[in-house]
Amino acid sequence: MGDVVSAHLDESRREMITARTGGVIRDFSDVYEQQYAVALFNSVRYEIEGGGGPQSQLLHRKDPLAGRSIFSGSLFQYQEESRKWRNRFVSVPDSYIIGLYESKTSHDRGLHPKVSINCAGYKALTSMEEYMELINTSLPDIKAKVASNPFIKCASQFPLILWHPYARHHYFCVMTEKEQTKWHAVLQDCVRHSNNGLSEDCSVQTPAFTDSVRLFRQAKGNYGTWDMMCGKPPQILANLVMETLHPELRSLIGPRLRGKMQQRQRHWMLISDAVYKQVLTLTSFQYNTLVDSCEAQRAPLDARLRTDMDQMITSKEHVSGKIRALVLPKAEQTLRTNVQPYISSILEALMEPTSRGFSEVRDVFFREMVEISKNSLNGGGKDKLGDNMERLSMLAFHPVKMQSCYEKVDQLNLDGAAAEVRRGQPLGVRQQGSDPHERANGQCGVHI
Image (cartoon, rainbow, N blue to C red):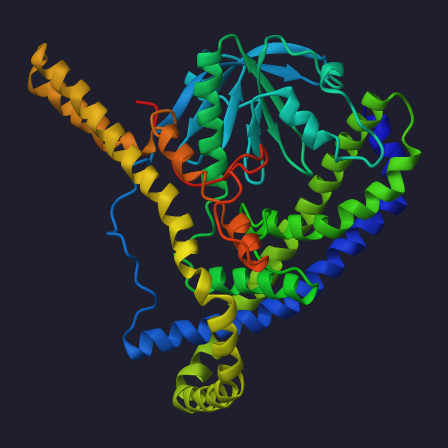
């Protein structure tokens, strides 16, 4: 299969990928340098004015997951090289990066995993039907039937597939539906946490980066939410590059692929993964270089900001006032006619799944308390009670027990609600979450 990749990604094409990636990062860097200064200005202003920045609505506490294993167990993994299924021990640490080991003994001895999977940008699927719907969009004019099983012959009727639009796919299976449900919840939890946004501890770098991505995409005519705004900054930048590079390469390489339909789809997946790895390597290096360059200028820029802060704030408020006077009347009219009539419907669409989610959390907590009470009545003493309370404190991070709560909130579909508002239709006409692709990546999930 490596020959297929090298045949279609020769030196000239790899140089083109490098050049295209460099061009995107250069354009992004111009925006980032400006937004870095803006973010630093806001940080310094909050510090001087005593605001301290936006305040968290939740209490700060120690990380309860530090050093813990979130989940572990055994899965069958498909080996693409040998086209065989192998039993693997799977460990999910507090980083939520999945580690696959030869055996539990290898894990317990502290050996490095054979494969590590960062789930940012992935979707966790449980059927070949879902998978083929996504695969059929990978190459134009190539459609595979579900029954044809183009790439693998599953060892059981309970598959688990991690799908990514650009990177390598990962195939697993289990022997029972109960096991499939359990492991799907674990994989979903890994996806949620990997897509959980950037660290808010970085009061300058994080807002600078997120605002830069938003402005960069808006300059290209892309507004609204972006499904691939997930993972670490280098991954997000790689997705930004692939957003335009991937379709272009597909149109160039796709018609030149030879073989049966299944072979062409598989070959394209290998090529796409190779391109993504190359782009990610480049964006990792170039992003670190960009951040180091901005951080090197932070001290003198910080000093100038503090010296001229009063004048800057005065100028900013003066310009803002003029813009507000020009824009406000039209904005208020737009809000009255296009937004205000739908606010109650939007709130209802938000509150129903949210309320169901919180109600399910309460029910899960109640069931756990009942179980602990029964165990206490059946004996165990203070030591056993302490273990039970420790288990209760970690309940919110248990991927399997909390899955029902996530499913309630997964029915929240803000993009669909916004589209219905734009069309002037009342919300709730379409069944929320009926599309198999509308899988929320959510947040949060411990094996105790």
